[in-house]
Image 1 (cartoon, rainbow, N blue to C red):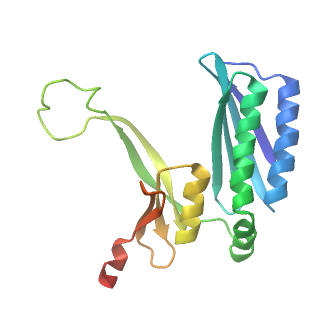
Image 2 (image 1 turned 180 degrees about the vertical axis):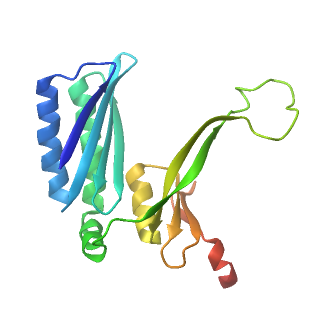
Length: 193
């Protein structure tokens, strides 16, 4: 397993790097049979520190977490605790997932854009309804089952996830509803209504 420890505008010492590597190997290997790599990034956030944590699994799923604390070690401990909670929650499904899917999840690249918000543009009414694009990039859309998509959304702690439904190849969205449940949009299943 490859573990990358980074610092944004801060120097990461050998003691912290060693602590992070040992802890990550122990926690991730306990819950995942074939972890691929982990990226841990530390940065200053106000008077304290922020730890952004991601674990990439061999099947293509990615678990993400972040934590803030006044101490850099405490920020890491909070992040690893969240990752451990995610992996523990889905331990059985991850093991079944590894057996059912020996090959990594397929994904295709799609263009993604960042659009200027109304507060960044003029206070007057816009001349056209065309949005102002301030950044262009690509994002991967993974081919998943609905259950895998919900698990990936939970891992990323994201409000929604767009994915290609493995059963029929159409684009679907799972999202967290205000009532705490998970919603699923499947345009291909329109005939079922």
